[in-house]
Length: 120
Image (cartoon, rainbow, N blue to C red; front, side, top):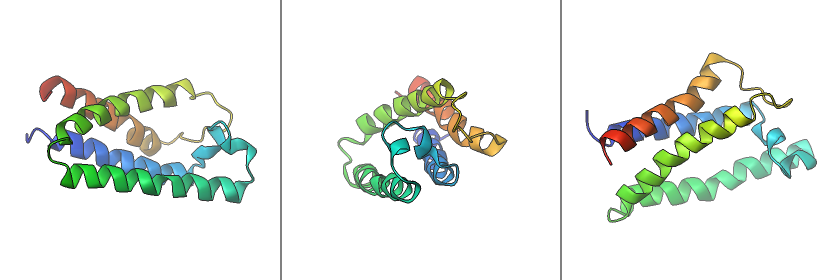
């Protein structure tokens, strides 16, 4: 398997999770967002993803000298992200209940961990 294929599959699952996070209204579990009205919280949650996506995609595509470091950081983030979801699993506003929602969260952590183990 191509070394970075694990990472790119994991990254794709995380992006799909973020789409699912909008559907599941993930912002309701986030400190600060839960105090905003529904429309404002949703717009802010979605809008804040734009600079993150631009930065990540730009770095992955054009910053060849830093790509390996970014991949290692993101692989670690995928694992931490799963941990955060496990921490909030009993949160009253957690609606990530379907097998698909859980898969979109767990697969990046599993693949990110494998990527760190086998392709450091």
